[in-house]
Image (cartoon, rainbow, N blue to C red; front, side, top):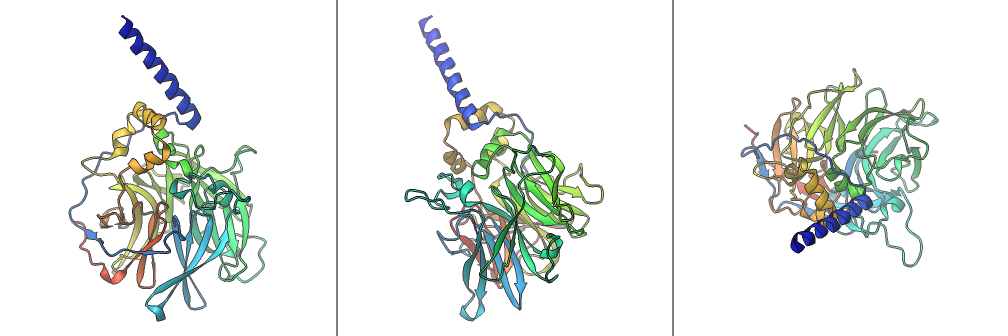
Length: 425
């Protein structure tokens, strides 16, 4: 009898402890259903082991998003970094493709005070809680300024940079090729949001043919530094939003989306493709609604950013889409799949395991996938040694493919000439 009472007391104490931990994290897991695990393809895999070169280690920290542009005959790439900076990179062909970079802007400010931590010093999980001060740019998009700034009266050819910042909102950076860039705030909430609300986790942005900007908010509850709590929580609080320059307003065009992330315009310019968890959804611009059938029902990894491309990574001409893959979602096992329908297990993990350890526990991969215009998998590029895990996207500049990642303290790249792959059967 005494033993049973002891167990009952222990169970009660544990229940109270778990409850207090969940209250502090604001994670109240619910069950959610994911597609069945697909088989990892045996064909169409290009192994890129040993090909990856690391650029700017411990300076180009957490380069989550990349976008290229051309100006006065030169090619540039912009990268969104974990320390709040947006940097401009360029290759020097006269020096064997050596890459150089300089800061364009920081979306926030450096913390003040002699003991204040430096921007980016908290690593991929922002343990120093500085992203809210320094900024955390994620999605990048080069646009013609006059299409998003109704008050602009300058040249119709002037490029500007739209930034979806996880902490600071939807931003516009002007003067992006010089040394005097300026930062402008476009929006920090949707028109229908309450006055005290500000975006919690903006992620990616794309421009529609009519000039409107569509962008994703991954969660309305959790910040970027706790994105895996949003995953484990299971509530679909993500949104698709639209900004129209004529009004300067942001409207919600779709909500209750589970973890919307990367977004791109389809090749026929009739739809938006939105990465959400392990799926790629389709949003009809004509019908202004999410379609019931996903563009890709299930990927072999958790998705991040997606880009519309007119060639395969090997250089072969073909309309396609490139998507970064973070954690493996394929047979025989996926941690996300294993816990998706077990909210009690996720509650225990969140309550007992420190957040940083949760991130490290999740099995990682170094890969990006290529899909055709029908949503069928064409090929996967993978480094089985995982030298650059959690890839968010791949982008071409010069003779290289650059590999972005919110997790890595460097920018990775590999030479295009080394890529030869057979299509998935």
